[in-house]
Amino acid sequence: MSIAIAGTSFLPGSYALAQIVPDAFIGNMSNVTQISNDLSIIVGGTQVGNSLFHSFSQLSVPTGNSAYFNNPLGIENIFTRVTGNNISNIDGLIRTNGTANLFLVNPNGIVFGSNPRLDIGGSFAATTASGLKFADGNGFNAINPQTPPLSIIPTQGLQYRESQPGATITTIGNLKVGQDLTFVADKIDLQGNL
Image: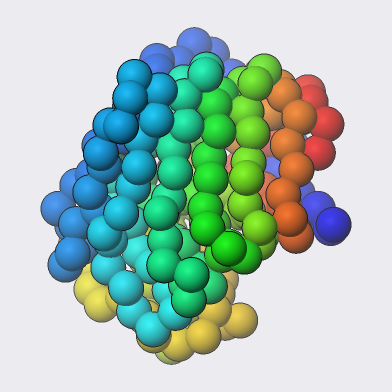
């Protein structure tokens, strides 16, 4: 497993727990079903080739809860962005099917608490950048979510847009995935094990 990290250390201020709330900025909205008090299943989203795009106004997974991206097995990459104003607080389980890679973009920041778990067969990338840019010039932007279109270019051309000034990724607990673990932020505070 390889780890790529960009940024500097910073201890963030307080943050509020949110939930998983889809927005309507992409063609086929994501659908979040609360199966029990602690399990949310995420389906839908917009599929382009072997990639799946999800857009949320809020995305957090509290302690003891699970967010299950129930992606079709042919999906290689799941691109997820947060377009609202809240930090993503991850202290529960995030799960995907097969060997799909999961990308999480939240320009407001991402905090992995004491109990986070990633059940991801592929790679996981978290960033506070404004969005992702593909080799063909198209992008998946969290700050300007109305910008079309979604790209069908293979993801080897993926580039992170600039990280938001002051936005932080914090890890307190221990994280591991099936392949690569990547954090890209203006500031990174690593207190747990990767």
